[in-house]
Length: 488
Image: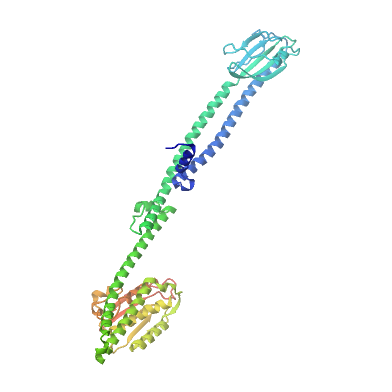
């Protein structure tokens, strides 16, 4: 319960929402209402003042004309103001009242007027004008009588015989102007309310999608979930795709989709990596257990154990390196440049000869592509190393053939099952014939990622007579339009 004014002020302060915390729809409504209020005030004030000025000017002109006409008539031949036939011309109007007075103000006779008899007030100035010797002398003033405002003119008859008073009622005009002001205020208020409602509706329509996008962003930020439904739906997105809010909604939807895909990709990467790491780690753990009895093993067993440890360690190191490159995509830091595929093939061939002892033949034209040199070297070395690995005792050399952006690595190994050809570039996929051999299943998937990032495509097929052809195509630098993809 509020007990004192201080508590009341504190309660009102807590209930009042600061302007900075208003919703956009409320701000639109208030802004529209303020603009409408300013326009209504300016236009209404100008219209009222103009109308009032014209009406009052016409009223003043009518009064001045009547007084001047009476004064001119009285300055003419002598006439009896009480003679309706020979008297001066008096304007017939609902707003005019006429009366005759004597110099002492004692005689007041209503000459003409459609209103009930209401005598105009007589002042000393009026009596002095009535006593004037000159006819047509005028004294004008404003006064109040009988609850109304009057504009009064006293016109002398001459010879000190009296005067005629003309009274113009101002109250009807002011009442009409007050009514006009009331009507204008009413119309202005209606327009003001309409502007506020229109602003609220427009603000609600325009900012409604922004509010829903904000709620979606807050939901994603608070929960970390990326499956929040896109506000508006497809139909709304098509209807508003051209405006800024529609583009923002589409971009937000695409961002959520990309983030969801990236998160799912990371989840699969972790699952697959844990699966791939399990085998070498288990083998290492087993060999480490055997190391406890190292002194009891025969020399051949010791040598074989050390060789297994070295091989498993090397395999584990290669797997971790590939996982790090795949997870961090460190290749993106490399700056693109023009790459001579012939020179690149020679480097890969030389390194493979040194590591494996296999003969690697290079048959390359002068193809030049634009890309990241290190990444492209990795994309070529992986299939070359695979070819040497799957055909370690082959009598024929591994061939690297480069023609117009098409790079092929040919071997005479066991080849690939036709049903598995379309899967060999998938991450962690290993053919049934290769599962007993060392490897992670990441090499060719990295080739696919690198080639796709360079605007190319991968290819794989079996060679007539045995063996496999694995490679890729990249748009040659000599073809600005990117070249034409080769036929399979």
